[in-house]
Image (cartoon, rainbow, N blue to C red; front, top):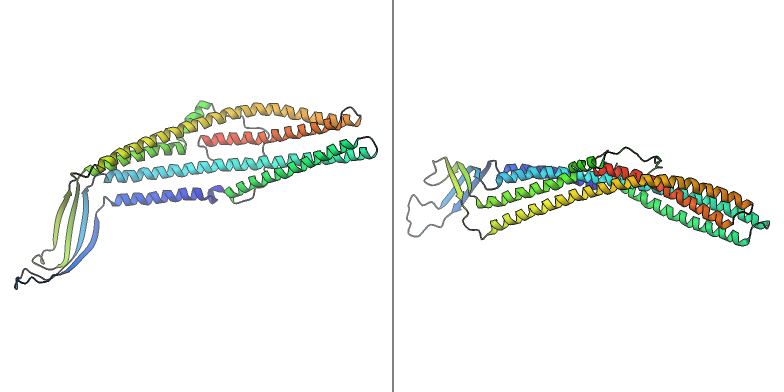
Length: 384
């Protein structure tokens, strides 16, 4: 849905089309041009010219002109530059799609985290209400103190506040999801088991070199290199072949139907401007090379960090899974023992909060684990 709706991807596709047209324009620079030309001139007769047959005060021509570039410095490099720019635009489009995929991954699992968080806090709210009812009934018959009832009511109000906060978080996550896909998210169910199968880190780091944004960085250096060749073309002469076929004209050449000529322009001194353009283009290539190297290092860093994080999340989930089981058991035991006066109401509320907070952490971390796994795929350039 994001592929079909997001303007960023549509713009990237249009830029590819635009670059294709620029390639056509670059090719046109080496092909002949044919044009119809004409001129009409009126001359004020000189006072001493008399009636010379070579003096025409009304002159005109009508012709078809063909111009063919023979030698133009940098014109071939300009065509190659257009081809390189087209490849760069395609890499950038693919990189935009990959970035969009990562945004969708985050939006999807953020909604999953928010939805499960709402459910968990709703459970805390339900338990807190039950607790208030129980303590209120016990207070009415003198089995619980008034302070315990106030304590339970305070817990209920805190739970109500937390519930409203989770609804705000869910609404924000849903709005972000809707922005990317133009649809409202439905219920999202995340598998409790985070995928285990992962290639070795070295293999993932090798894959990153074929990622679109990394390839785009390398291609930018190639494009910058073409700019150097184009700039150097300013030192070369320009040679053009020009031919005219006359449909009608005046003067002594009125019966001559055609002519062919060669025009040569040789640069001698241009104030150092061309040399400066060459140096600037060389610096541009170096900048592009450094940017590409930084993109590659950044990608390798992101994969390494994400890979290590995923390993740690798996270990963390094992601990949290056991902590969740223990905290739920503690809450059930304290709730039962309170009936016999073995623990205080505060103990019950603390164990309830511990249980719900552990459950929130565990359920959120499950979604984060899936998010990291999908991001790790995306960081190697894998698209669905």
